[in-house]
Length: 202
Image (tube, rainbow, N blue to C red; front, side, top):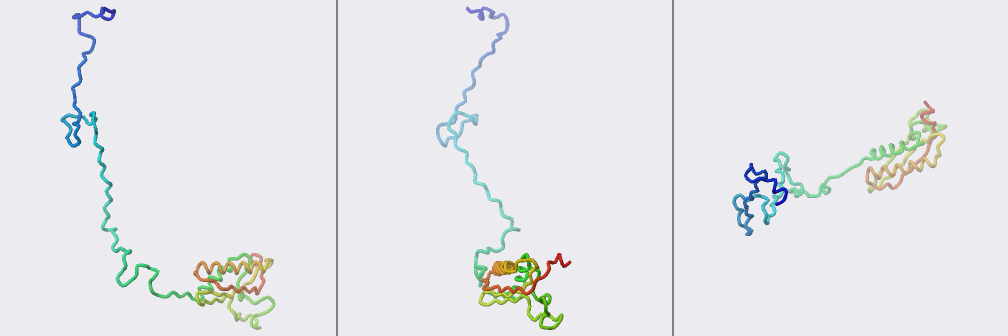
């Protein structure tokens, strides 16, 4: 007998070693695929487990308040599916073209103003001192979806006149083409005056 066994006196007191009890036997789920689990079988019991079924996500119900009243993808009786095919005419007045050309010319650096705002250098318009100019500073004409513009400007003193005129012509043609969606056939620029810059005149 070993030293550990000799220190134990049987019957001298309670056994200091805990009693080892066997765990109850819990059978696993039956091997059949459709047999129900046995009573008292835990969830994690040993055996094949069926894959959990996940329900597809439900789409939120659309409120009747925000539901579309009409499906606009369907053709309207008596109408057309394509809104661009609606009948009617579009008219752009020449005054609109002239206004756009005026603003496009005035935003160019070196342009002092439009022609006709004052008498040309050294003379009065129409030979009458202080009389109104006979020609408008901007004239535009639309024909066969093409635009022709005649523009008279005054250039600031000290600017390169030909360079300013070229920039005015290109800017007017670009802005008219973008805003109106038409082809610009010609932009005729006439430099009729040279003026001091506005800062120097003030």
